Image (tube, rainbow, N blue to C red; front, side, top):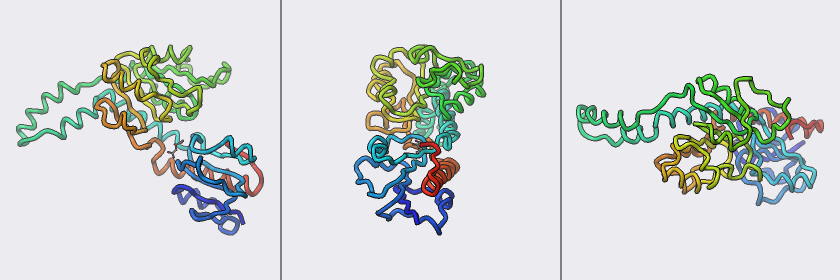
Length: 304
Ligand code: MLT
């Protein structure tokens, strides 16, 4: 009997992949063979002595001590692509929120007072103040062209945008698998200069930390919007807020409501919602449960 400990709530559809005759699964298990988690930060917890595998029901693994585990020969499995559509849809929402000034417009409407006739008159001021712009012809810069970045790139094309992409890891020409309509930017700097919207879809590693910082933020157009539904440290909040305050940037949309950004009038900061749809939670849990099950039972390794 293998024991699997869950450190976060995991979709029952995923847990059902563990046959009860061969697997004991639960949150209270101590001497676990495998750990399954979502965003729980594993760095400070003692590792069970007989731990053989860890499964992240998501794409990123920066909440897991991967190096320490690999020294012990413990693989870390993840679910690349399983929540890509959920993130893409949130990015599309973000593009529209920014282009149509929806945050400010919504707040403006909520503060209107008086009779409906008075509100109707006051609406005129909002109509003027929050007028937006349309997406066709605007340039969407996608940094990171893995499963999520590629879907975002194609969503941009389907909205009539011109899409440029850059991926620090796709260095081999043949690895550029996007449609011919997505242009390859020569560098991140070139992409930042050209884009009306920049959307990040990279893991947080040394090379991607603070890709937007006090220096690179100056490359962006003053009308540009930055979207970060990847990881908190990819964008330096301080640099972003300074640029927004100085009128050198249109808006910032992100999945990390830090104190620096969460109340800023030009920021929409969400509580890590990118992968939070029922479909994505099911897909991730099923993929990772099958990976853990097949590894524990047969030694098969997929996505580790
Ligand atoms: C991911 O890395 O795919 C997301 O952080 C998943 C999640 O929100 O659990």
